[in-house]
Each structure stands twice: as structure tokens, then as C-alpha cells.
Length: 160
Image 1 (tube, rainbow, N blue to C red):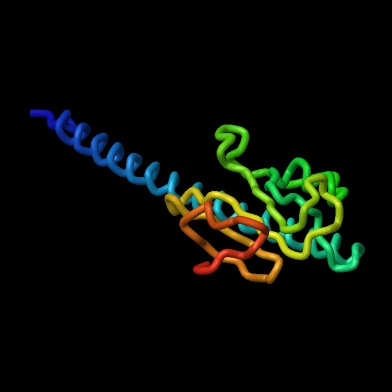
Image 2 (cartoon, rainbow, N blue to C red):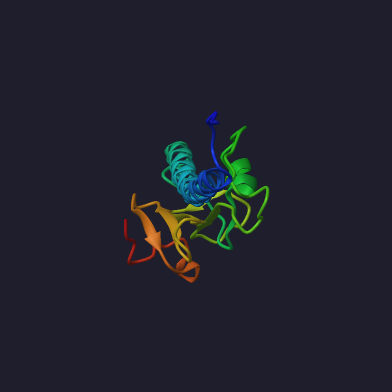
């Protein structure tokens, strides 16, 4: 009698199901990694805005652009800072609720150099309900509420 060498149907089904389970686990892990990478990009972008604001203040007697009502950083703030290429939130094109916010003290709303302090912030994606905040005082960190960004004052309770 000849003996045929090969895999049985059961063996093939077991291998295919194991590969499917591994692929599903990799997809879930990859999604979390993507969110973390976008959050890291947000932190980096806000740091770039902070550096641009400090350069602006150095040229304007230590004053920052005044936007007491808050603006989208890649729009009006970018124009005030005379930047040609401003970063946008990595998720902004697919979800407009993700963007970089800027608010300062002072009364001007047109971006003139009248503010003495500011707050930049963005919603984080990997940590639900949290915001990354960068302040004119040099402080930065996470906070759970966007209601604390009034008057350009750095909110208390920032955590790393």
C-alpha cells in the first residue's frame, strides 16, 4: 500500500484559525499603537507652537498674540506668527473635533501682541477624555477637562 503524505482537513482548519486569531490580536495592538503615535505627534506639534510663540514674544517686548476667545492654532495663530507651514492635528482631516487650541489673556482678538500668558491644548486620543496642555509658564501635561482653559491661565493639576 502506498501512503500519501499531506495535511488533513482538520490540520489545515486549525492552522487557518490560529493565523486568524493572531491577525486579530495584531490589528487591535496596531490600532492602539497608532493612537499613541498620533498623541506623540500632538505633543511635538504643540511644542513647536510654543517655540514659535516664544520667538514672537522675543520680537514683541515679551508679549504674545492676543486671542481671548481662543482660536484654532493652525489658522489665526499661524497667521499672527507669520508661519508658512503650521502643523495640524494628525486626525483633523477625518475628525474635525481634533485640532490645536490657543487662548491667551489680554483683550485683543485679532492676534496683536498684547497678551502676557497663553495656553495651548489638544485632545488626546489614546487616553479618553484627556487633553495635553502647554502653557506660557513652561508647564505641560495632561488634564481631564477642557473647561479649565480660561483667560490664558495655565490650569492647575497638570500630570505627566
